[in-house]
Image 1 (cartoon, one colour):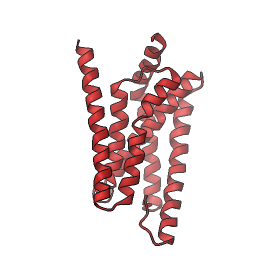
Image 2 (cartoon, rainbow, N blue to C red):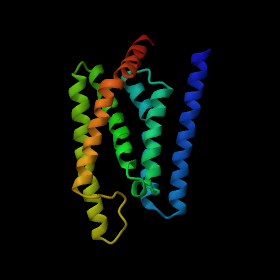
Image 3 (tube, rainbow, N blue to C red):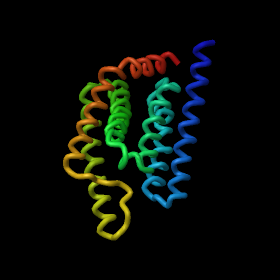
Length: 192
């Protein structure tokens, strides 16, 4: 009974977070902020990652996993409406959470395929972190070159180094705190 209530609350929370992401998209349209619209739409699509990963790998990813992803995506999308510029720590939190999602996905795939999950988590979070930073730089530069407001903003070398450091923090969180929740998803999926 308690477990059913917790699952129901988790599903409701996930739906509310997805609705909030769509509200960010709507606000981005209202403000004529293409960065908020594009990032909000990508964030919304990313909230479906646990379902896709669960089905493809035979995992029991529950509401808590979905809320983890949806929360990270909401913070990222909402950041495009101002907090990235106005709140000094916002980018650090979103990089940590986003990289923890990448690390969790890498952990689950590696475990399912009988590979070393530690190497997979570190490689995926830092590898995709470097790729993201390069993409951010290229998009910023290209948009500026043609006179458009960039969808992504690059704040320089120090910011890039900090972003990668917080990506590493996300990987560390997966390998320390997240392991048991991810292992439970694997074991519960095997019992289904």
